[in-house]
Each structure stands twice: as C-alpha cells, then as structure tokens.
Length: 140
Image 1 (cartoon, one colour):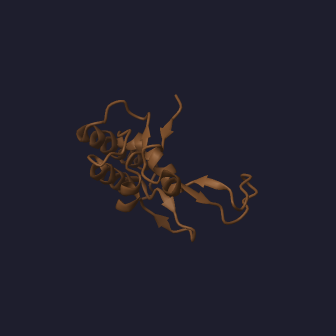
Image 2 (cartoon, rainbow, N blue to C red; image 1 turned 60 degrees about the horizontal axis):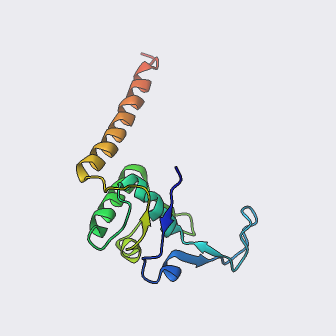
Image 3 (cartoon, rainbow, N blue to C red; image 1 turned 90 degrees about the horizontal axis):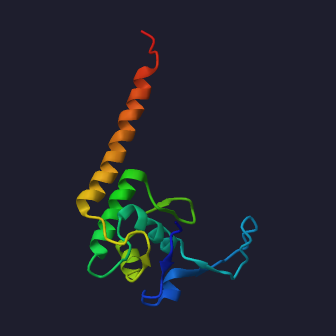
C-alpha cells in the first residue's frame, strides 16, 4: 500500500511545505528554481509511520513531537543540514505542520503500543548484536 498524504489543512501550506531549489542537481534532474517538497515536510510524512499518528492536530502535536523526539534518540536524526550536520525535528517544525495528514494509521496508536514497538525493536537488536559477538572466538 502506498503512503498518501495531504497538505491541504496546513496553514500557509505552500510556504511551509515547499522550498525552491537554489542550484541545479543533475543527479535527480532538479533545476535551480524548481519547487520541491520541504525536507522537513517529507520527514514528518514518513514519521507518521513510526509514530503511529496519521494526522497532526493541535490536540496531538505535543505527542507527535514527543514520539518523534524519542524515535530520533533511538535511531538518529531525521534530517541533515546543508553543511552535513544532523538536524532533528523541532517543536516549530511540528507546529508549522498542524493539519498534515497521511493514510499511515486509521486510528492513532496508543502510547503504550508505540513504546512497546520501538523499545522491543531496539532491545531485540542489541540482544542479537551481543549474541553475534558472543559466538565469535575470542583469543585467550
């Protein structure tokens, strides 16, 4: 199933959700002046999958931000700045995207389910890494 999204309910959606290319990028066909989806918008669209929340509303924006912050703590930053440094999603980013909706979830995932899904995944990954390490022959 494809991930579909709508920007229509975001205030000033065109300014918030788009940027203008400042240089040509021949590798993907982008030309200076092209209108592109803002990388922050793209990240928030994809975060709807790992947060389990399909629509950012004023009432759940704090929870969306909290979940994204935890995901970034566990797995790393969502974005890179122009100079290659990690850039995390900010409160301002989430607030500016109130109204973003996706088909990622027909019903918002509970916090307990979200926590179990991510913490279990991280713990399982670390345990498996140790098991692989323990199977190696370690010289005495």
